[in-house]
Length: 161
Image (tube, helix red, strand yellow):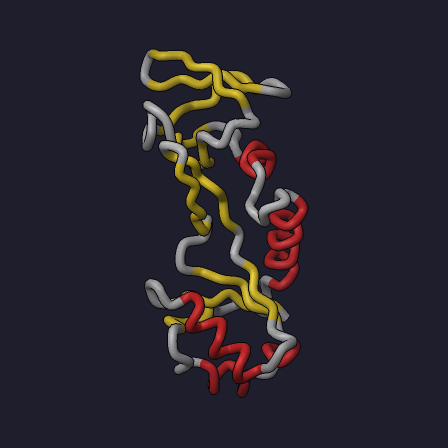
């Protein structure tokens, strides 16, 4: 069973180690991330911020989750995880299907999400939100104020809003 946990700032690894220590080697974690290149430097960014997907068969037991509430590094578990198992599983599978060789999400993942608005994450228009005017197989036309820009889909310049 999958759950979603929010960890304290900078304590992702601590949380993972503690949960694995308590629940054993069956523990599985998933954090979808993207790779961003700025000035020839590459760094990874988790697209879900301080949230991580955790999978273990014992998560179906309410007592186990109550015992885990005070694990070092954990802020809290999202509620209603039992009702949302299908959506969580679909999201994790969709992310894994769009991963590249380095376990980062490819641009195709975001292309499916970009319908009307998105935000540039790098380049001269960094942090600018834009409207999608026209979509094509390889690119789309955007509008920022009165300026029209054509953006190639394969470039990792934007995220959906």
